[in-house]
Structure formats: C-alpha cells, structure tokens
Length: 320
Ligand code: SF4
Image (cartoon, rainbow, N blue to C red; front, side, top):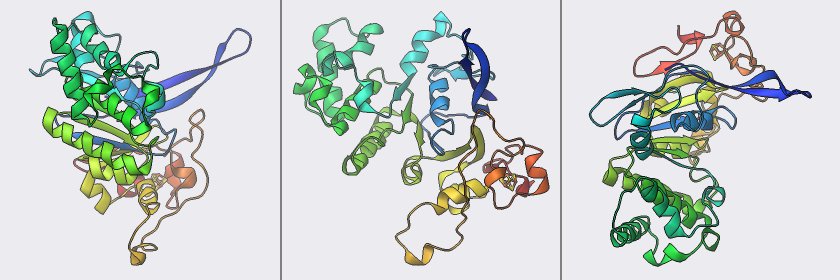
C-alpha cells in the first residue's frame, strides 16, 4: 500500500545527501494466489525496484507491505523481517533475475547452487533424498541430471536461466518475481523459457510478478497488467482489456510502438510522443507524463491525477 522508494544521492567530502532518485511513488499492488501480474514500462521506470521491494531486497522508504500465509494470516513486512516470519517468507517468495550470467555463483556447481536453499532451510535430512530431488528439478526444467557436477560457465544463457528457474523452484514458493527473465537471451530460446515458466505455474500453483518492457511477452503471460511511468502506476487492467482498450495516453504510446503483422493496422490510432522521460531526480509536478503528452490540459502540470477505477484503473485527468 502506498509504496514509495527514494534512493539518496550523496556527494562532497562528507558524502552528504544532496538529493534523491525518486524510483517509486505511492504504488499499490496486490498479488493473489495463482495469478500472474505483469509490470510494464520503459527502462528506469521503477519496475525492478518494485520487484526488489516485494522480495525484501530493499525496504520501502514509505508505505506498507503485507504478506499472507496459506491460512490467510496477515504479517506486516514493511520493515526488517521478524524472526517469526523470515523463514516462511523466504520459502514463499523467490526471484529469477534478468541476467543468468550474473545471478549464478561461478564458484559453485549446479548441484550446489540448487541445494543451497534446501540446506539453509534444512529441508532434507537424508543426502540421497536431497540428490534425487535436485535431479528431479533439473529434469523438470529440461536439463540432464548429470549436470549437477558442472559449473555455470559451461552452459549457454538459456541453460543458465533454466538452472535459475530450478533454484527458484527448490522451496516450492507461492510467488516468483521474474525480472526480465528472457531479455538477456537469444530470441530462439526466449519462448522455451516462457513455456517452462507457464508449465510450472500450473504444476506448482505459483503466482508470478513478471517485470518486462516487452509488451508481447507481458500480454502472453499476464492475467493483469500494471503500467508504470516514472515510478507511478498510471494504468492497471486485466490483460485482454488493457490490450483491447488502452486508455492512458502513455499506454497508447506503448501499444503504438508494438510491431504489427497486419499492414492495415500499422497507422491506425497511433499515438506518438517526442523526448525522453524526465529525470527521476527532479520529476515534473502534476502528471508525470505531462511534458510529453499530446493531450496535455491546463490542469495536468498542476495536479497529479490519482489512479481511479475498479477493474480498469487509470491515472489521467482526461477521464475524471
Ligand atoms: Fe496527458 Fe494530462 Fe492525462 Fe497526464 S493527466 S496523461 S498530461 S492528459
């Protein structure tokens, strides 16, 4: 609820705080069991920061974060994780990072990488059971069980991302944050990774938060989509509804940038903008999109629109 994240900028001899990068402004997001939420926006809009706050890699500067266990008990996890919830939270929420060349420890074998969470959480007492479980996970993501003694550098990008998926699955989490999981991969293997993620969602009953700038991918994998611009959620709707009826001018720009196979569809209803997104150090007053918006009105640079609506939410004065 109302998640805000500011990163301090330090300068001078005494490293005094000279300003803030305003990465997220008042974001509300809810992720239900067995649901896929897509978070879409340009590079630097705050999507990754949101994923890292939900996994507790970062604490929010302001706002509240709640985790519900399988019985529906609510835990406030806005600040440092309490001992009573730390273990359950870590088991339930995992992350797959963008770059599998950075996210796997090069000093560990594939078997050690996948076993690490099992050993931290003391899941198996018997080594044979642990080995069998790791082999089963590797096979589930399309890799051979014989790979356990090999090191990450011996694998291609697609294979490394499969190892990262197996590691994320180890503790049978309820939510996996997928931060651009295919953007560092060749196009030919991107689809395979997405298909594996979809298959294991059904099999393991997982929720996903998919972070991407790739609209096609987000459309393909999400039930609901949140569009973020300059740290603000500016539109949220069920995936089909958002693609059929984008309302916010920025979402229309994003949709217009998608290549179409249909030549008659290429010019119709296109919305274009000029310029770059403003700096998150000094964001504009009022609507964050107003310096680039072709529909800007007098009110837009004075009052920030709120995200309003029920199923289809939008933050734009055009619709108030
Ligand atoms: Fe454009 Fe105004 Fe809507 Fe912002 S609030 S998107 S500037 S019309």
